[in-house]
Image (cartoon, each protein chain N blue to C red):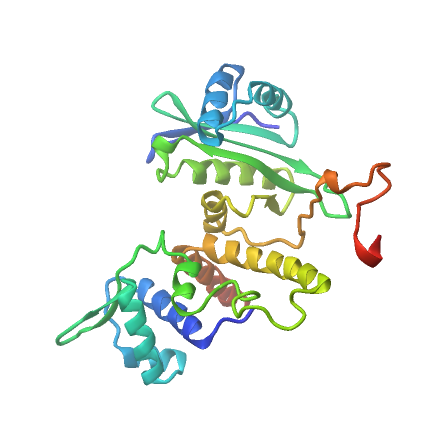
Length: 143
Length: 171
């Protein structure tokens, strides 16, 4: 499964902000960390703001901060702001889709979508932060 | 097999091996959450897994002298060549005590028991619609394993039981 660039950027942003709950980060700091264009990031942050997951703090030392609940916000919550998660039938019917083979293939692709959906829906930002911390620890031990 | 009885001072929760006297509360708790009353199932489950047999665990969490949840699991030498591992196949927490760390304490205890018996992996299987429980296991660090559960409706079986009814060229 490959997420669109906006979805990935949104996930990186909310995870970065949620991992530093007492700080406000500027868009340029986040853009630099993930090596992405500031313009694209600004649009993503605007969409995350509309979804009430981040908020802009104005003034000196201002920036963005995460304002959702990391224990309740799932990967699905973030991704579906930017793209439909079930893709196999999202674009309507393509030639052959209504044939017998097309119908069978749709069932198999639906299985994959269901598993992807359940995975994204069961992983919260807090779980992702724990996972990241675990990988960081493992990498440190290996170094 | 060790009898479990651990008091956690910070939360006031005790995790202990289940007793016969817990049965009524286990049935009630499961019935409340699942919506299905299964007294015989839990009686049998308590007999099989609560009897202090090696590799089998039926643990209860108790808070303020009341059962707040339970977890059941065992070490299985799974089929298809898998190495023996711990399996958790039941986890229930009283909705009134949720978010109090009850499930985490029970899960940590059963995982430690599995590890002490020499296995190095714990498994579970959750319906993909059960997001609450799946999110809990994810939060404990569990990830998708290498096994994929498969199932088939037996109504798809042909009349003589010789195989599934498959349409078109595959029949």
